Amino acid sequence: MRTAFDESDHPRRPTGEFTTKAGVNAPGGLSLESPSRFSSEEDEQIRLAHDIMVDPDGYARTHDIPTFTELGSHGWAKLIGDTYMSAGVNGRETVVHMGNATITSFQGDTSTERAYSMRLGDQSRIRHTEDLHSTLDTIEHSAGGVSERLTVDGESSIVFTSRRGEAVSRTGDGTYLVGRGETLSQSEVDERFGPQCCFHSSFDEATFDENAEFLTGSR
Image (cartoon, rainbow, N blue to C red; front, side, top):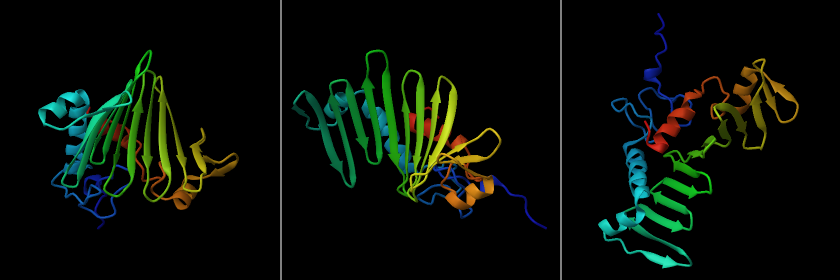
């Protein structure tokens, strides 16, 4: 008798695909005792990056970190063990690095644009960029290829770009358009581009939302 598939035994990575080994649900090999797809170190880095972004200068003063001022910009940098952290303010732009996490905030004339990114333990990178009317969620895969979801005023479109530069999009009839004319079925997409493709049958598009919630601290 076959056991029914239970996704909780095969959680997804932040890059969207199922883990290949039951009981592992994070790039660092986290056990199922911790349900997060992100490691505790990644959680701590993004949390601290958000804390620093609130008041980079105040953080430096509180922790006695020397600051610099040059050519209209100011900031600080510090290495604690193997962890590099820094913050810089240049005009309307503020950038904070904490380990593998980066947050950038740019104040425009009418809105504030913010970008969040983190390099994961498997060397993939996830990003979330937002402004007044749009968001862009990106997964850059260590195995090659980039998955992107662009949302403008609530309407979303998804594109995958292979390591060879082939752009893949979904058509209205359940097939996929590659480049300017080639059409592929679901099974052909699975075979050709592998699980790192956001159109692979094992990919969960909710991953884009979950990554955004993690990066922005809203989960």
